[in-house]
Length: 146
Image (tube, rainbow, N blue to C red):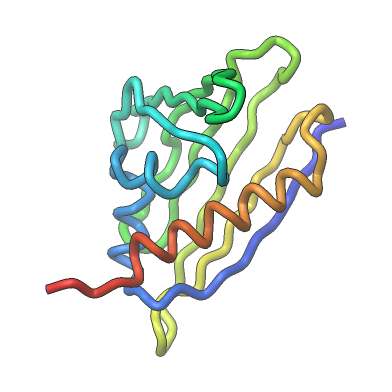
């Protein structure tokens, strides 16, 4: 049965910068793939109803898995909702990702919910991958380089 995970992190960056990191293909390719993976964006149309297609390549094995989805809801600097669907028939169904951003005194309170994750993806692996991704997200958005 598909399952849901929830993640929470506070980032030392304003919500507008964090929001932008979810809508910029180059930024996503930098922070989204877990350690040991490289990412390419084949298509990225960041608007409600727009779609995207990305691929992760395992740097060790060279194995590539691609996925894509649709942007369902975009509330600037506050909320994003999009879908993910893998090209692999062993990973059926659609994952719904909801990202909530709340401004706090030190930056942004980020909450991510990923619902509908296929059984084949171990829950612990999903959490580990997201933890790595969120660390990389911090490396992209937290520096304030003039």
